[in-house]
Length: 368
Image (tube, rainbow, N blue to C red; front, side):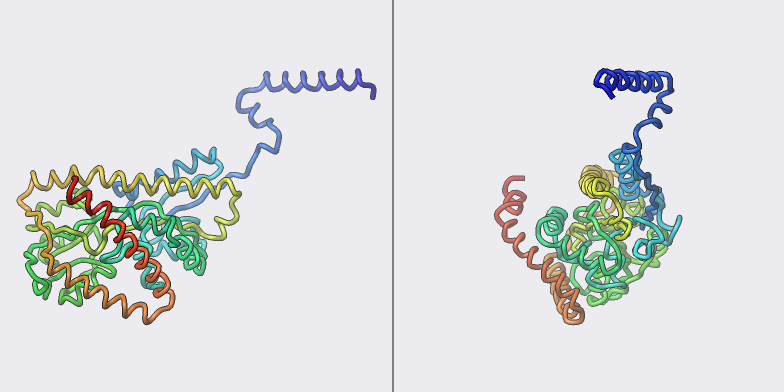
């Protein structure tokens, strides 16, 4: 073909294509785009441990799905199910691990019965605060251990939220000494509950929906929940006499998004990056929302109720910590994974504590 004919034919082809596009609706024009721009769309399911539309935590899962949809241009959409809507709340880990669903959201201490080491990626009594937990996971080797352990269960984990420092719980009995825990019926799950048992308490595992009624009727003498915002919504300030601080059992609880590892690895690299970035955004959003609401609702509790807000005596905290350390020694002696994770966790905590002596502790004591 001669050069002039080539140019003429090319111009005609271009004009014809342009006319076709101009004569189409926007939807038809988009569908006539070259195949290279068309990419497969995926639809996933996400199950959570939180009740449907649970304030902040459940709402955050809906936002995560929204952000992933927006950043992916609709290539990855996620349907979110609250606890019990698709699978029981405490079977989220198994559902993601088996591939029954692609994603889940919860906190790793819920899976302690599967492997004791898992709970150290959430929060442990006398552990680290939210800032320190994030530093350990992101920059202190925690994420690598987390991924290695979760890979055994076909799960890719991401940190995606933190409750911040929690409160120590609602009581209808003053806690003046460690002996006041003897015979106390308290709802506290996980390692904190095991420590209370060592102190002589009777630990009762009640679901969240039953806590108000159980406390009101004397089925339990005390309960912990999260912090002022959620505790106020539960109405504990109307029926309990004392609200104690600090939350020695949960000083900075990490929330996690779990993704089925095979499904995650099958994603193109840009969607993997979107999933990771959305979870980092959720991590900041949940902590920020809780911090911004807790200071408002601690004031509301004081203004609207006769409940006294108290601090545990120093000797009580000292003795509870001693019990916790003895328990950790027993745990790491029984399980190699627990030993590996705990040693990484506690070594980082000690190093961070030394730095905090010069930074945050001085700030809170002298500046704020």
